[in-house]
Image (tube, rainbow, N blue to C red; front, side, top):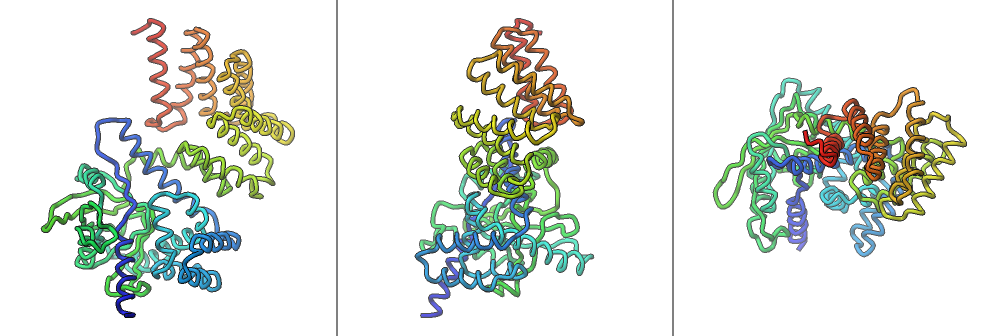
Length: 476
């Protein structure tokens, strides 16, 4: 009986392991569709950066333990595991904990696969520790001790939805894919094939849905790849599998897709450290705008960028309890301002105006008169009045925003561009077409100085200028 129970647990672990969080940059001639795919990649990479950026604390450990206890309240076995984790957890044993058949493996990878930000926030301690230990072991096992090792090939068997498979196949010969979860692989292709066959119709398999059975053949350029990986053969409960574990968010180039026998497909992908250059530029820019000195404020910024406004509100309110924010007047004013933005997007106008005013009050009382947060506050109040149809009041605040911005030792040109666009829209309502074009052209000039050439805001401004010329009957 013990052997049967053990086999069931192994089958469960294996079939859970069969589901990956895959993002694919789909080959397309449609620029907007490509931009959506780039955005999916970018957000996943930014979330990873946020989660591993901030140090673990005893508070974050206790938050994680309490969350897991609540999540597994009806599971006596996992409650025992959680108690063991609380009493004995050591960050240097993070890989060992991950490879055990416990709540951690399933909870973590499911949350990464569906990007469940609430769960990821609660278990952030373990995510950071696991990523850090994989990085450390990678240096020890592959960089320092095997400097002449150039290539390692590993395998992973899995089931993909038909849509995922078709998208991946369309990128054959040079496209990119990423895997949001931590990825377990094997040096032995036969072990990986065993996983792949679980997707072909075994009625006992968890993945008995319409799946395409795939063998991923992963070629690693050891000297150039930027994604840490580690040999976990001595920790895993499946020692014969020669397991290699990759950290979350690994990015691969798709080399080839070939049919095998019995409905199986082999997809050759390569881990080289290459990235789509446009994507890399855009991600680096967004990283600078999103990352704060506060974890919860950083998550809120990402949620806001993704238009998940209720989540952004949740994490901004949490940020106000963080001493990094509450003990710093500028951070407090910035969070108040961002809450104003969120409530405006949620059409809670009075609440939005209230938080914009709170931001201005803090800034005017405690910060220099050329502090950039003042320009932001004036601009946002201008937008509220513009939306309410009070153009004179809107223009007054917009011009106050520009004046405050340009007083700064280093004016924020992107912010100024937004204000110029807002003034242009107000002039457009008043049929002041030449003034509108003048403002749009100033906005475009600033955008082209500070934004990546493929940034969507530049495209929108070009489009708006074209429409304005058309409406002015100056078609040429």
